[in-house]
Length: 369
Image (cartoon, rainbow, N blue to C red; front, top):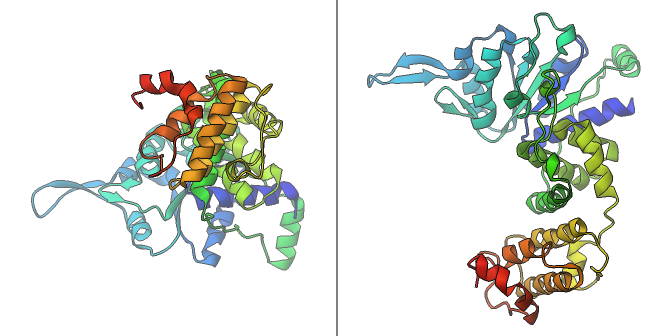
């Protein structure tokens, strides 16, 4: 199988697993719809909504008068089937870029709040859309920035190898299905620590809405899409997928240019495993480390403690913050120690090390002393 095609399927599968809306961009007739509907072979319920043939009321709900005399928004049958299905499901918006701006705006409520009329869709429902580039669409419309920032954007193209093999054998590549790992929350927190370290060094990359209207139809960095990038990158690592899949997902969330800069920066961090620092099997010297790297190490420690840190591990984390403050300066260490000292983070009976004294003014200012 073509590697790029295979990586695209892996990236698409991870978006569905994570419940992050994803939009596939490709020329007409490339097999986007068939690929999504192939998920039914493994028990996933798929509801296909051809958005260009819909009305806003098909997404917002049709106003009706209830027996009590109230006006309610009745959901369409496809939404009820999704809500009633016991198991994973996909709400598939086909022909998204040929839908009018009014229809695309109506889809925002579904994507953001999972609400169709007076019905709320369960978390087991994932959202996928398919779109043709405007230049090859019949009466195509660019996506507005609020809409495009709700999606991870993936390019999808059929290859000659996949087409010929599938046509001859009748066996087409299926959409892969994967589970969230048990430690997914912790993995995402550690990835977000890395993202925040990058943004401390490159604060102008937090939110960059393109000036060009066409570029606003695709991926660009916002706080929301950075969260997408972190969650999907952590999930790709958990399943030990190739770096190309991670690059595809991160670029699909925050755009090619910012993704290239972030992934290059992350690759060059070369930092120790936070779990090793907490259990004493690894050590670190903060002297000479850039402030952004110190920040990432300490935030990763906070993430590695999880929601239920042990007293010894918590004390070790505070001591490492003190070591960083002495060797590299206070600024990068203060955010981590504030998080550690917060009431919900400190385990009962955990001894407070003397190293915390260097943070006394900062903690007092934050009301933590």
